[in-house]
Length: 232
Image (tube, rainbow, N blue to C red):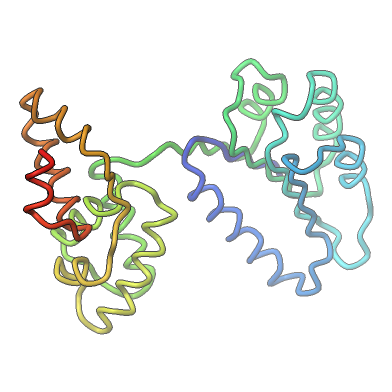
């Protein structure tokens, strides 16, 4: 089985792979058969290909995770890897690309066509992002009110890595109660853009929505209203 995860947003891909590793290690507690190659550090195609042909006494089926292979390999190397992939039917092979990928790369085109699962993850926005937050909260056996979800996005944006951390803090803070807007104000300290010029440009362009959003972020970060307006 071959799985291919890629896209600008990396949290969802990482989470999916962690779930795969967890399930694999549950069946193979010794870790035998789990092999990870990160081509940002080193990319030896011969070693990757060899790992697919090796027999493992402790686990007949291996989980091989190959990260960031595209930038470090040439077309010929990718073709050699494809030849091996076409003959390896026993292993679970996961490709995870954190970097941008050329759509005409040999391996990319082959994976898009032949992988059993192809998942492109792009930044979440709007309703989709709100649903993601609510699902993550639900997985922790907690609840969040709709206004609190919107407030959390206002504070943090759509960085799923930071959002997941903030959600865990909120779940602990709220306890048995629902996560409210006040909980977000008490616990979350978002990454606020301190550049006043962005806000000034929004004001000059009469873009009231953007200007007010940035104002709320600056005040939420702890800047005094007097200081903010004097800078405007």
